[in-house]
Image 1: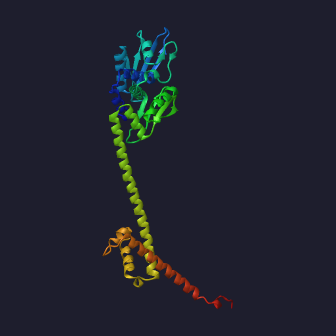
Image 2: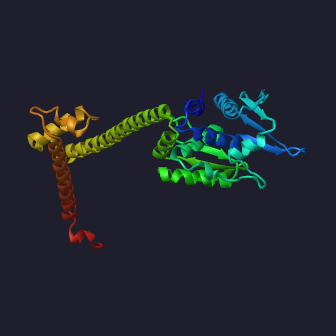
Image 3: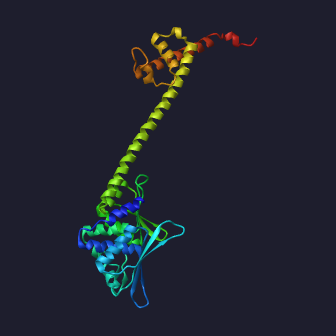
Length: 328
């Protein structure tokens, strides 16, 4: 079962806080999942479709429980897709128009009502129920172990703007884009996804998302430390190689026998341990020496090499007499 299906299954088992919540939730589902048609005799017919069994159960339960309407259901399976589609028909039955008006889907004498049914959303719990129904009908949430993304595919810009407006007082700044004829409302922030799940009262899903975030944070911290350690090792190896070249120059230009004991010991110990860091190198001495001490010994060797080179250049210049540059 996908994470989206798990969230919808949890939402399908939540009862609203007041009697009106059930009507509001059904109103949201029918707006998004339903296709309304006006028949030749002036009566209405609605067909609702969903790929989620839990949502189909909610549709049938609410329509039966609130209005006592028959809801013939068929199930289709595409030859190209493995997903099943549940088709739920609501014939007129002499009272569908009244049901649609009660749910704020149509306005008698004016046709379908676009946007959200503000007349049904005066209570906070009803606004929560409407968002819950909208997500069950058109929602998707990514597996939180891979990504943080939640969206709802909605029928029309006005409905999307209306739901986005409902979310603002709850601290959720949803964005809207357009995809294949639908207006898609989405949030990508972890914090806002958690707020939206809490708004819909999906407490189990909240815990799942928060757990995934903690695991991700731990993995990121481990990766950061490993990368830092690898970088430190690379720098240590590079520094050690530079020191080995420096020691070769010292041996050639100065000679180990002319070095103080501490510097000679540094050169010999580094040659025996060509890959360890300065801190590790210092611990090999008796008594152990600090990383700072090792660093300063390397600096002293550099100065000795520089002085030896300067002296060599001076001697070379001194051996050339002015007369040697004149023509015979």
